[in-house]
Image 1 (cartoon, rainbow, N blue to C red):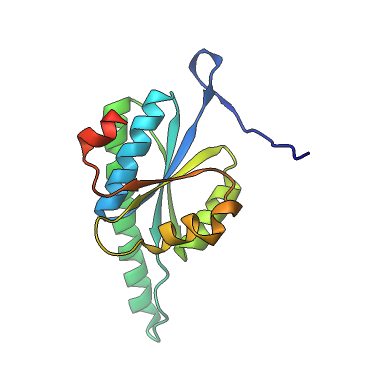
Image 2 (cartoon, rainbow, N blue to C red):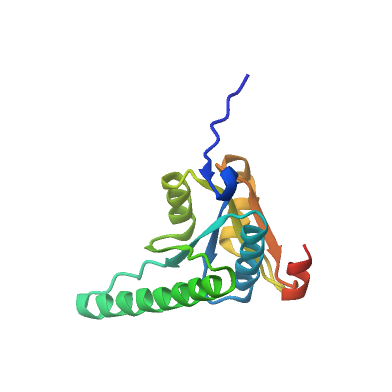
Length: 166
């Protein structure tokens, strides 16, 4: 028989706190995932981790140019995740954990989940049009059974009112 280790973070009144991980970028589907996770965290008295990914920059023979491009990408990601965290704080009164990581998205998310066993769910958003992005494809495909926690995918077609009703 398999045994499962359950990570529990004591919340208000001794209840276990659920921690939701949302990957933040500039897409509409990330906003859907953010709203969904925020509402779930509020309803379950949980908390959130926000992770912004900075893709690695292709090698440039001109190191100074590459460093500048990398710094600009990191600054954009930091501004984006900070704004998202500010919105969460203003709505819920709870400040999420903020992280900005450089690297290939799938690998970074897997490493982050491994470093944070308290995360109860990975929350992603799916685009309204076109195929799923690389994170949704990976974490809902053949690798879904290898996740250390459940994964949620919010359809990009959901509006704020639709999400709030869930």
